Image (cartoon, rainbow, N blue to C red; front, side, top):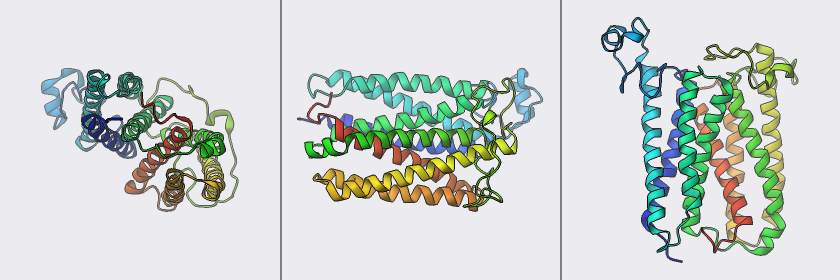
Length: 338
């Protein structure tokens, strides 16, 4: 089947940019810059960051007297600019798919879904600011960014015909185990997003202990309450230490489950796989799992250094896209890329 090379390259660029947006989002959150601009889509009513409170008072009386933190504000606005560029690229992908759908039989449903998703993601970005970092919205915004990256990467892989040598025997043997593995990975990423949104990443400051014990005092009554204490500024977190330790501890348990499940599954695939593509997935997934565990441990031991914390977010995105691609390879009819 003939490939639309322009659409393929455009999708690859968009996928790389989506990963960069995920990294920028993590950087903005870790710098406590999520409210660097208290309005949306501008910054204190402007398209760029005002240089000072005096400059602000001159251009927008509604924010007169506000304390402007240029570094945080620029981090937030840079994230918005790059995310906006990604939105334009996705619209271009949709237009190209519509234009060439008969000539190249290019995918159409996925570009349409990506367009709707990026619009919803923009709404989540607005609500993240206007609801003052409400944890469920922050978590959904993170998951939305990851989903955009995963789907753009999957679209690029489909256009490249990467899955053409996956054999039916491997599909029958591995596919339902891969589905369960995907559910486990997604659940762990949701837990990671909840941990970050509630500023619980350093609730346990050593490893493998959680402060002074393996199993700390746990408080499940508030740890996973989605809408609790509404109407306030959530920057820095509002949960008590015990509740944050509960979130962090559950996230650690989830990481252990992900690692051991996939370790056993990867060994099984390594022993039984007959497709070269599956063997590639096996090697890549093992490397990524080890790196994610190491980055998570280093985050705790080194007290959440910015480069490692951002790398942990990027690693989660890359791990998810590989697991999704493996599932697609095991389930899809690879001759049908529509």
